[in-house]
Image 1 (cartoon, one colour):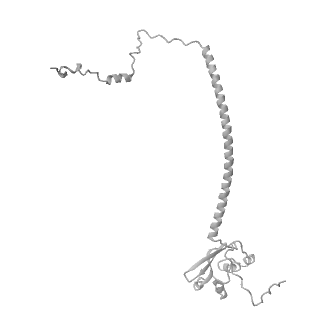
Image 2: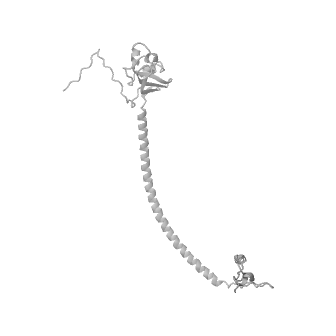
Length: 248
């Protein structure tokens, strides 16, 4: 059986591994330190250095070893490599620390961000991960909504088919009932007509009134048409003596 490797000697203290890129699933909090020291802009980096998010190979650690404040920007701008800077402060509740790589005094590349909220340290997720998570959640809800809508539409379609069949049956019954009622009403009207006396004759015309004959009655349109037409003229008889042809 293989024996476990021997523990390192007292003088060979191994350096901790640098923190990984994605550590959004963990949180760090040291309640004993928070009860002992105030959490402000002067001591917040010392508190952050206790967390697993801290990279001991950064330039801030070099400044600490020389008894210089680790967030002194005048010293950090003269160095190159990995560093941490305090970007946002809302004492004593919120502190935002940004991890970046410095190439020279003017050029830096932002890598990660960490925030300390009421004493608890978290790693801020990357923007791409946030978008991927939101899109995945949105697609899940959209897919679920479509599944529910499809099931609802199937139920509505079945209900409409049943309602259409019931409506057609009721319409047929209604038409049959209406036809019977029509026959019954016709019979009633015929019976009433037989019971009633015949219609009286029209009243006589007053004295001196002569009713017009059918030949004299003309419509207004016929009168206008007769007035508009010119009289018929015979081309030979009615042209006058001057226009008659002379025969020699």
